[in-house]
Length: 619
Image 1 (cartoon, helix red, strand yellow):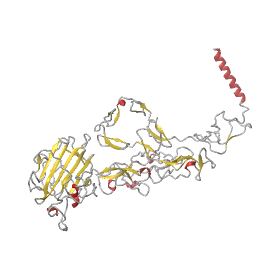
Image 2 (cartoon, rainbow, N blue to C red):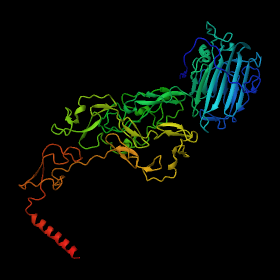
Image 3 (cartoon, rainbow, N blue to C red):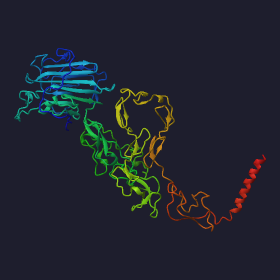
Image 4 (cartoon, one colour):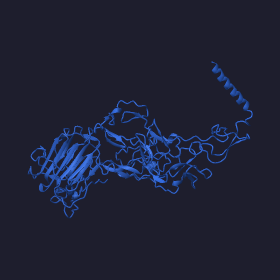
């Protein structure tokens, strides 16, 4: 497992760069606490609860004490005397190391050199190695560096920020680690390999670690003149949720999957970045998007969407398997079965019993709907369109060689994958879509990005990401913090809205569907607060049913009393209603052989109606 390097340009020299933080008291102004002159020694256990009332959360454990080690690091749980650095990760050794190397302060000379000091105060813990020498009691070359830990600007969860400051970098190894006078020999000695300094973090579990650039090489001296924040010699990191930092967190990325699952966001797992997809596979719809992420678009096979591959942080990317996600990629419990016990919970279950889009799993017996919900429609270039009837179409449409009716302006338009043609131009499936709160349009689908997202304590999900809740970050003016960590308009704190309604910033209960504009083929469901597929239209009555869908006064009966002929344009003429009649001929059997026998009955009914009105008037 490779460490993740972070850094900017590496200069050729290693001169003093970052100023050390002073004003902390003591003989050297770096604090009143100090290690005695020693080689490979450690402090006693140091209580840091004064600086961190909520402790330091570091890889599944919260610590309120630590140890300062002479060899350029701090550890949790116990001190460490190891002088030759071992490549991260190391078992049972939680460590933060600005400079893990063979420091030897027995050359004395304080306060001018060979000092290891620390300071504890509310909101800050500082350790300074000031002009320290190397083994064996040598200080002709000296290093000065500092470790500063501060609570994160959120409340009560043990998160913290780490800063390394490098002021002087002259030696990179000790003479007992294969070095000669503080550096590796120009000609390597196979029997005594040289091991330079290492800097970074170790989770102590053989899995989670983070090494700075140049670690275990002579290039470690360049830490004095490089940076990850644009300040030579200064390196800053955020420890959140006990996890190590990683590059690119929150950036957009490509997952290597298909369709709606192709785009993702960089997330951190075990201090390493990986690309997590923004969307899960959903039931295929006719929208020009590969909704079920199987490598095919708008197919009407009515198959359940495939399982999402489990998260594998070690892979760095999500990898499709022959175009279709393979259920063999995950163990039966949804975890990664790589043959190696990583101890990482993937957080993705492949056997939930519920389809990702809120439907029912494929083994539930529920039929998967067709890609086009309306009877008679077919999917063509991402749009449900009526099929041609005897080579003809209604309105501004043309019958194509595929026997479908499409907009004439889109006939010669070939849109790229993920877009569809409307009014002669290629558009994003989300263009013009306004999803009802709390859903957001992604790849033409209105979805709740926080559905299934579990955040750390005192964090809440917003648009699919966990952010500090209002207990830690104050709400905006006019908003009130709820115990859940969410902010709501103050006027809504006592609002009692009907089921399905939402409270707006003015304290009014409104229908979330009022201003919603769902994707094509969907309608807004007020109770569910989401866009759902339109209900398929009912088919026209069969020709021999004796039911005439035309209004009674829309046409006179045929004079010959015979069968009624349907011209194909009498019902919903114009081609816009659900009862659209296709061109052609259909025959209906009349309800009676002729209308002659029914006339006496009509006369009797009219006479009865007149008599009833007369009686009412007499009263």
